[in-house]
Image (cartoon, rainbow, N blue to C red; front, side, top):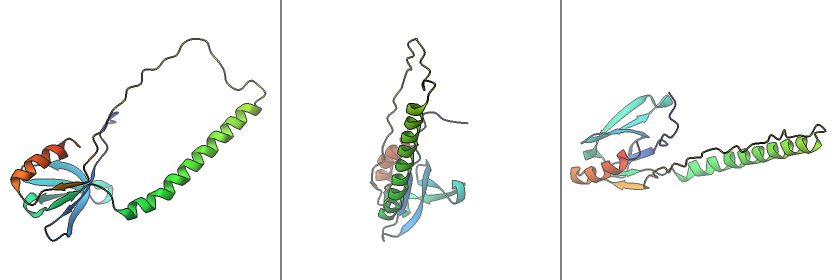
Length: 142
């Protein structure tokens, strides 16, 4: 099944009061007293962590992730640009007219969708009252 306007999955890292990472993965579900993270290969393994163990939930990736993905993005942009240049060059040199122009007004309806961007940090402090407010925000990301 394909969802055309699905919210992108949200990557989270859970930390305890000592600052140690206790879990990481994609947000799967929240309950009144816990958060469920999808992790493992192909994200088919689920970990439920009680909020009493969670001090902070961070949603942003680490600096190392950005350093590793930047060259991949650059290479992708260069390949796409090269493909466009080659395509345009082939059209210009095409002796049969290139584009097949057709008459008629072809308009397409474009819809735009805004995605909810996760906060960088959700402070829980193991408190159920704080968790209720933060859970509302996290559930918007599902």
